[in-house]
Amino acid sequence: MERLIYFDHNSTTSYSPSVRKYLKQGILEDWYNPSSIYFKAQNLYQKIRDCRQFLSEYLNCSSKHLFFTSGATESINTILSLETLKLHQLSGFISSFLEHHATLKRLNYLSKQKKEVSLVHWITSYQGEIDLNQLEKMCFKYPKSLLSFLSANNETGVITNIKTIRQIAKKYHCLIHVDAVQSLGKEPVDLEDWDVDFVSFSGHKIGAMKGIGLLYAKKAFAPLMHGGGQERALRPGTYNYPAIKSFKLAVQDIDLKKQDYVRKLRDYLEDKLLTLSKESLEKNLSSSFEINCKNANRLPNTSNIYCAGVENHVLVLSLAQKGLYISSGSACNEGSTEPSHVITMLNGSADKAYARSCIRVSLSPSNTKQEVDLLEISLKEILDKHISSYPKKFEGILESSNL
Ligand code: PLP
Image 1: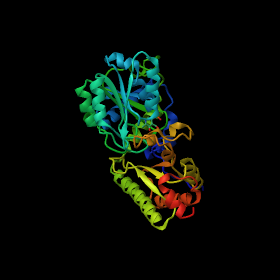
Image 2 (image 1 turned 120 degrees about the horizontal axis):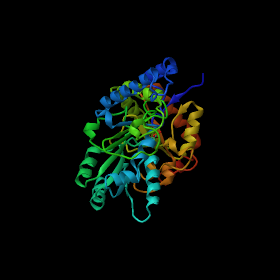
Image 3 (image 1 turned 45 degrees about the horizontal axis):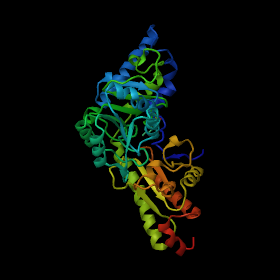
Image 4 (image 1 turned 120 degrees about the vertical axis):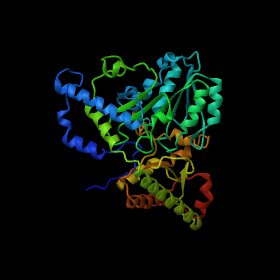
């Protein structure tokens, strides 16, 4: 059988054990429309209520604040709207250049809708972290804004300090939306503790089916679509019961204790690559790696790695040929070879060449030390083989080694 070693869990995940079991053994009976009034259908409706209740207990929030959506993109687009501003008499949006495209592109779209006012204000970053001083200045200048931030970055894994953001937000009467897609399953998510207004989640990042998401809304919001009365008419459309159930089962399978193992595995990979870099420097060889945001508070599973001299699409495809799956950044770029906007912004400079040589490795408890060893060996082999263009700082080294 063809080898498949998967290191792209921030992009999507395979089904969790309970979801797998449900898809194999239980899904065929669950085809009724939960909004119909006969027993078989109403039974599913009751089960949706149970799923919502289960999720609210896990997330530590009231079940009446949870709405099923088709994914985080929909949840984000629902909350980041002109209607939300109107409902809460807010002046505009404050967000960062590090956000996922679901936020960036939505806000860019909205800013074009109201050309007469400047609706969106962007925060820059330093080393992948939101500049909190700049955020405070921005909130002072534009009070009563809707702030939207990732809880953890999908490309670097850098975790946002939600508590500090909340303090700033409260001071300037702002509301907060958090894109928590990458946190669920990797770090504790306690919505009472977070004390924010809106949160978006996605099922397929934690082992549920694709096309299911969750929106937590403590405050009023307007529906993105209009139709039936599902989800109190705030998210109309026939319920996708199997996907809802898979979300519940995937959350049930979360075991945060396993993240200690994942962190050790990630650190093991990073240490190996950095040691290799050091040895290469000493021996004038080519393998050179840097770990982006290494010292930041990061998700345990994510590593963003600069591989000197090789473009990331070469790395992704060469590794895939060996049965190793990683990514060059967010999967949402649909095959684009444009460098990641997040990595481009890392040092506050728009260094596209650097970003073009960065890859993302995102692990899960299913990965092993042997797989990580294979990744390290393969990366070294590819770098040794492909060095073609290289950044200035390695020029001297590479020239002296005649590569
Ligand atoms: N936000 C983040 C941080 C993500 O990683 C993703 C998925 O790539 C999304 C939002 C979009 O989620 P979905 O695929 O459920 O629409």
